[in-house]
Length: 130
Image 1 (cartoon, rainbow, N blue to C red):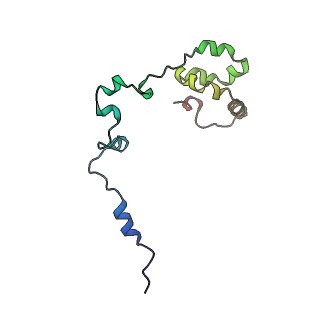
Image 2 (tube, helix red, strand yellow):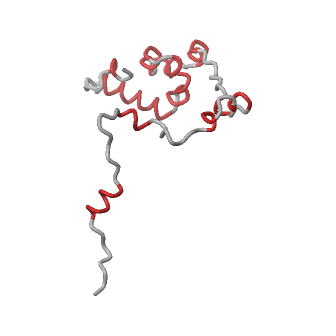
Image 3 (cartoon, one colour):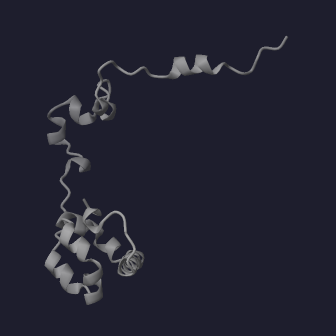
């Protein structure tokens, strides 16, 4: 008689699944395994003699909020009042191109039109970027 080609799911699941450690924190899932060491961990002097590009600090581009605001049209300033007032400069520096995109401005126009017609918008504006 031929041997069965299918395995039972129970046998596969117990053999290959990892059992959680008792009292383990969720953050332990995101840590690097202790058995794997990065090159910088092998020798304390290796990073000084052979610095890798990943170790070099990345210079953040300088963002001038006032200069950026001066470039906006009056309509853009009106539509983006919430973003201008609530977003930190670090977020504005990263999102400035996205919030000036046609799609984002069209969305803001639509939301303003809905609000003016008396419709309720969720989440409330004060909670959008909280």
